[in-house]
Length: 168
Image (cartoon, rainbow, N blue to C red; front, side, top):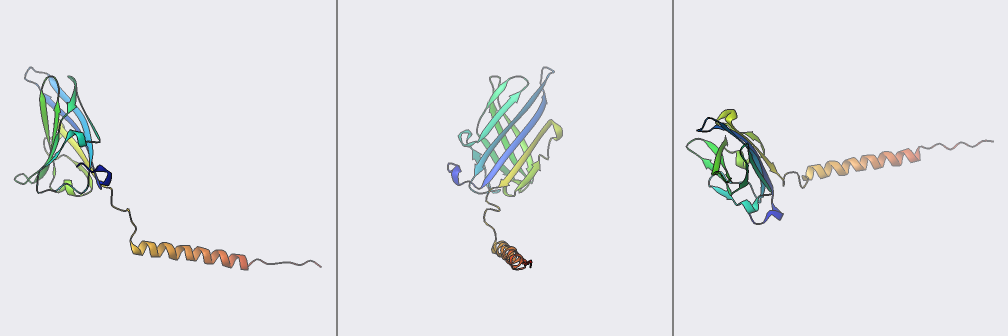
């Protein structure tokens, strides 16, 4: 993760959690993080994203503002899901929230909503392939050159078609 200048994949994650507290209250947590990776995160091994490699990270609870810790992206094969562990720390506790996404979400561009825990622990993962579409395919170049040729030919023909009128 140290070479973000050559990164090709952007991961953006937003979260919302709501938990009942033992004293009868409720804790609301919202936050986000984003980071870039040189390639798609593999769905066969755990990837730890150090807090220093994050492009952005914030965590807010109705109790207090927290600070971000390292995050983990981890495939859980027994549940058939990709999982993000969002790590944070407040003066009240060091917490981790777990968000599950469809199997393969880490290595395919798209927008994914969390699939477990419903609204009480909702998350959205956006995976963007920054390398996609960077260089046009040869057929695209051919069509573009052909189009410029048609435009140039039409403009040339238009110049020759000008009629000159002589008055006597």
